[in-house]
Length: 287
Image 1 (tube, rainbow, N blue to C red):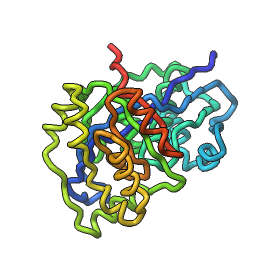
Image 2 (cartoon, rainbow, N blue to C red):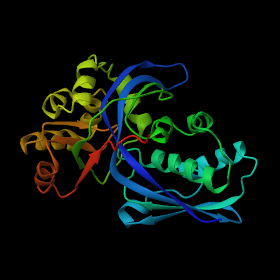
Image 3 (cartoon, rainbow, N blue to C red):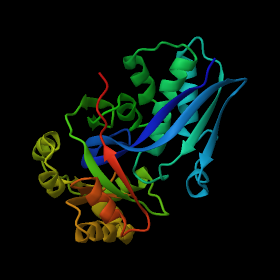
C-alpha cells in the first residue's frame, strides 16, 4: 500500500460565543471556525503496529505527545474500531502549527489521520460515519474534518457550512499554551459574559468586507484568559496599533490573530512581531 499524505490546516475562531455550561462538563457555544493556510502534514503508511512519530522544530514537535494523549493516535484507534479492514500504520506528523495555541493543531492532525487512514485501509467510510468517529475524539475534530469554514454550535458537534470569503491573518503565538478546560472554568468562575448576535459578523465575512469584519471580531474567553496571561491582551493592542483591522484571541488561546487588508498588509504588520506568522483562509471548499 502506498503512503497517503493529507494536509492538516490550522483554524482560527473568527468569533467564539459561550452560551452556558452543560451537565456533562462541556459548554454550549457558537463559533465561526475558519481553516487557514498554516498546516501540519500527516502521512500514514502501512506498518506492523499502530503508532505515531512527530517531526519538526523542537519548539513545536518537542511538546507533542506520541502516546495515548496524542489525538492522531486516538483518531487512528477510533477508526480501527469502525473499520473491519484496519491494520497497523505509522502516522507521521510534520509539525508546523504551534502547540496548545488555540489553533486546533491536535484536532487538525486527528481529522487528517481519519481521512488518510480511511484511504490507506480501504475503509470506504462515508463522511457522515467519519463525522461520528470524529465526535468521539474531540470538540474541534468534526469541524476540521469537513474542510472549509463552518458555523459550529452545541459542544462542537453541530456543524453547518458557512459562506466566508478568504482573508489574510497575522497569527501571533507564544511560548506558553492554555488548556481549554482551564479557559472555560475561568469563564464560569468569573461569570463570563456571552457576546453579541453574530449575524452582522457573518454577513461581513460572507461579503469579504474586511473592514467591517475586523471591528466585529470577538471571543468570550479572551477577557478571562488575558487576565491570567497579560501578553494576550498586549498582543491584541499591539496588532491594532500596527494597523490590523481587528484582533482576537483564537479558541481558548494563547494565539492572537489580526485581520489584514491583503497579503502585503499582513506581512508588513507581522514584521513587527518576533513570533508572528502570516496565513490566508479559508481555502475554496471542494466541490
